[in-house]
Image (tube, rainbow, N blue to C red; front, side, top):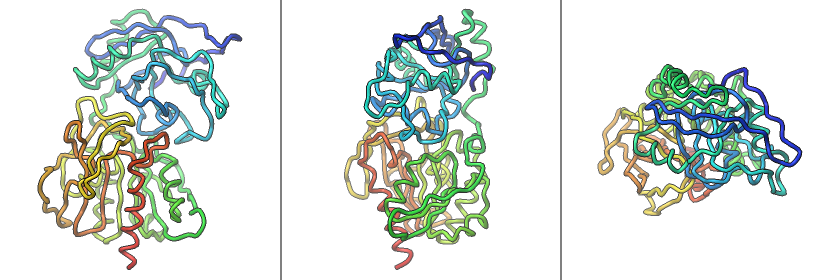
Length: 387
């Protein structure tokens, strides 16, 4: 969470910015010095790293990064500036931002603004000049942990005390903080074919866009919506979105998923939505050591036998056996996708009810697009219900 008294940093005429000393302090006491980047102030959150070489704007505006301080492993950030078309929501959600070498000025034909100025305008505290390679290696070894970034204090022990008093991600119930306040609708492009109701747990704009391209109209509802409110939209299927926080806290969404499956309504969940459906099917979830974040993660689709290069952003996962069909309250369930780096469950498929999930992001706007077919699979699930 950012300090509400953060102040913008105005760009200098030559494209560089005046900087002041800044500190990054991890909860285990590791200190990384740097310089201010974005707003001047102080912020706290969970330190995580993303290995994506592109798509920093989509990362920053992804609600799933709420309350996280994101470390970019790519060394040079800000080259292409920012624009309104690439936002995945209406604001920047990261709690803080860590880069090594910020671009002095943007250079891209689509750019309408400067990344650092936007961070400053939205009060997002960052730090640059950090040895992000060393920081990433530390997080890989020790795991994601709480962190503080400050361009106000030069006392690391003072900052460390505040880091250790900040809330942890385990046990964090964050869907209500990122969900839409009011329902809204994204209409199908061309001929309308089907209607999907999406429970917004932290949805990205590209999800209803991908469905709209397939003739699907999407009604996006707040996370606290009831089954009656979902059914009032006349859905052919239901979608559970990505989002931030610990899935072990999402009791309302889990019960809602069980109610939807009990009706036999087709159901698709992505990322946090996948974890919700996993819990609804009777599985536990657990926190990964440092998570999967980036756009180069290899996943095996066990249904087709193909390997996809995929976009990830998750710190929790479903605990399910990989090599057997599991008997649940809703019939047999199997692991449909698995990460080839570490055998983490990346998808579930129910055999006896029309429901499936993936832990990664087929809607990834910055790419890659290997998994885009999953939206076709969702439409096929709906078509099978209507057949």
